Length: 304
Image (cartoon, rainbow, N blue to C red; front, side):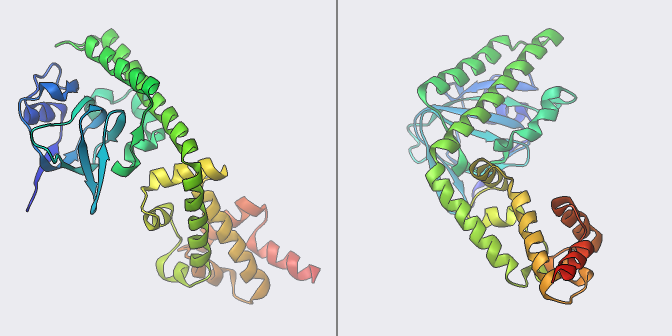
């Protein structure tokens, strides 16, 4: 069966799709109880920012061939460009949720717009959703309700400032709650760290650098079936070092072996590791070791 694709290019389009009464075209707080139209199976493509807090019922989001079920207390976030397949199994019992939706234009030129880059969870996959405890649930619910109470047909500069502050608080707390969730899942995440290191060692021990280029964080995230954002945050919280830095250190460690055990030129070593430009390899090597590859080779040779 071919599923309909529904594109939410604006908050107004979202309201029209589900029959919500619009209050302001740039931002909205929705409650699924108030929807006058319902779609049970479709692919949602977002051109807006959205934070959904499940308040009851059961809803499934699909990613690839996997289904993830969400009940009360689950938070799922979307940003422009993200999509998910929605599957409501029981058409007679639609899930209940409240949502905070806002257009890109609503936050354009504000400090909030600049800070969104730090909220990696906006790019997490559906299976990486946040699960709140009762206290956390009440806070997010209350903050969204407060946004709703400030909405009017004409939002003044003062009201908009208050709304932006509330949205910022919501996102900051979601980020904080994710940190708590990372801590709880640490034993499981430890296995992922070990798998990452195994895959990295395997990559460095083959010719993949020459054939496929420098390994990226996204490459390893895909291997363990996680989004790059979630994977990167997981590695940083478990090891204290970013995944990118771990990859760079492994590249330098491998380069040191070539510099001391082979007669390959520095340019050839850089190419074998996946660097398109030798100067990029030299710069990275010096940033990590404090000396250039040439100096490292000379120093090692003089000590033999």
